[in-house]
Figure (spheres, helix red, strand yellow):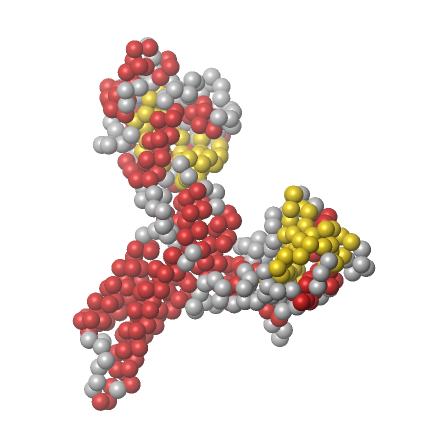
Length: 476
């Protein structure tokens, strides 16, 4: 069977669509040869690595396609670790299509999704965690996500995995040596020391597993739901935060019937805001009933709930119950429509979080201790900046690893492998305490080592690689 790594591949390496500049990349054993056949303006075949040449590219018939800058990167000093030629051309889709077609006609094949990065992994330029970080960096929707991806690309997660795996490999070697000399009664490891080292590895695995939720939030954004009764001004506040009339607002209660979703960036964090239908009992209209259920689902799945209340009236029993149903760590209470209050009372509510809490308490709202309460007017914008500050503080309180300049947060694939490593180490500890034979201990450690190796790519199947790189775009 032909090895795909023997092929020379070509693809657009920059974003598709019209642009001022585009880069078409060739990579593989014949990259320089094929690039030289397309280029007019210098001998690429004789070029040193990391040299740029100005000239033109031509098609199979010799017709000039575009004026380009050709960059030659010799193996292993390239992104893929292979010989590479990159043509910087004008970003016309027509120019790009013709240049790629010329590369195909000269003997290259079109790169599969993620194939350049897959080759970088297979050639030892990146480990699997770093390869995944490339896709995360491209998809980063916030400063925090970008920072996390960059740290992973720099190898921080790999380093955190390497320490426990290396220690377990040394321990495994000692245990296997004892198996080889079992008849002589020689044991190359102490049970107490083995248990200690196993516990140390478990602690490191647990510290990484603790970042799983953080990683999900960094990659997909923090979900923030605006909840509350009908006509308390959720949609108006939603529009005010977005500074755009995204949700329909009328004087009639119950205008919102579905979840309206938009993403904003706040303090380097991506927030997915969800405007939802008003919560009330006794709804009979099928569309409103469905909207309320979706609102409740949004609230259950939210990372933060902005529970909006009307400053111009007292809470009823249903609103008080809804407020109390929010998980305390997720709650930010929002007292809206303060512009309808007397000026002196409005001024008093601007004195800080405590004033809004006291006001809500007097109106029958029971807030959990230390949870923020903000007085705002969606109509005038008063207090909204303070609300956003409270929202960001609440997000950071949720351990999102957003304050750390060296953040490491695992993804779903990492989590599944680390859970298997943890289970194997739990069995190892039990078997050490149970004085099980060395063969059993070795089997436990092999499973743990294999699971850790799967995260960084030392031990990974072709199916897993296919799954990972299929999510990349073509050209990366």
